[in-house]
Image 1 (cartoon, helix red, strand yellow):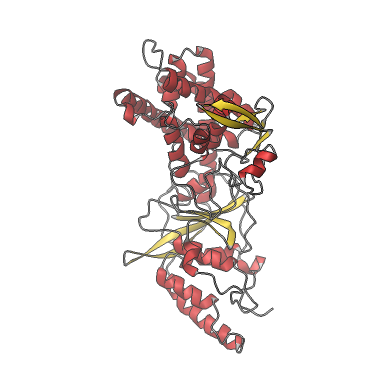
Image 2 (cartoon, rainbow, N blue to C red):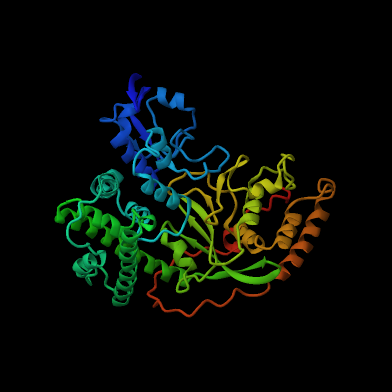
Length: 500
């Protein structure tokens, strides 16, 4: 390590050769890498040859060990640049970008705070629209095989423009560049019938994107009048920052054309997912919220398309409030946040309990497990392959950015858990069915009979069919998801309490 003086104090520089990170980095990881490239010389040597390693996972170590190996993990490994904690929680109000800024002594010393605060907000919360850089990066990453090329050609120019507008100020040329006018200039090329053959899809995609871009212009103009309300990762802000900072018009237009084309590709995929989900059967879920009973819809979809989650909840798709998505990179359970009072707290507890080691009668091998702790956000120390993102009401068994051991729970058992997991009384009944009494070892046959009776009583709550789906507006063009075979064809996993 070399010693130098940075920001008025002696700092020992770390030689680094690799920056391990997620397979499909989100905005906060790219901002971390961008900050290190700009300001990292105060902390690191070897930056000219160091590279990002999209490994997705690295064994946790302390920072001294990482430093000795020449590694600086971004967002993984519980390193200094990772906002995740070993207990599965997050460091409050932090993300990889804000931790990197702290490590480089940038917090509070530059004008980059608006960018850092916005990146942290969109990393910790759901609901970003396609007019924000955080969501556009997710869309573009799914459709490009080379993330470094995406960074150099599209992400870095956007961050450089934001940096110049915040640090150096805007060199205001006459007028404001409207993102809507940019769209109108190129839309005929992007929405050409050879690219989007379905005329109905073309019309709806154009309407959606135009509405979103009008909102982007509106947010930008509002931010000019009141800087406290500006959004620096908003598409219109980035476009104007490029234009006003003197970027060549050709480069600015190429940048916006790429963004628009990815928006259209994403919407085309969404339309296909709507047709898939429209043909998928739903199942009833009994809920109890604030003392009132209500039956909502659940749905199971298969595939790696991220738009399946949104399409499964959309009124023209699955029209479901709870979704199980099964994919090659992981499984996810999500609740529509538009349904007040519905959470995955009990579902998380039931699934994690199911994953715990048990004897042949279904009795926990570890009697010290606190059942209430199984509902905690993040990961549980005894069930590390499921992550509960409470803010977004999502429960992950692996995903595009985090690998995890696939669950051993059969899909039909997951469906059963959802059918009972949104009503506290039904959830306790479920636990009584699956958790053996103290007499189980002495009379297992009697125990199974008792459970059968309880199950019969419990299913009486679920005799109502799933509510009717909303009226359809999407035409059926025969796109189907791979059917999930019924239990008698695939064979359910044996219940853990039955004898082997």
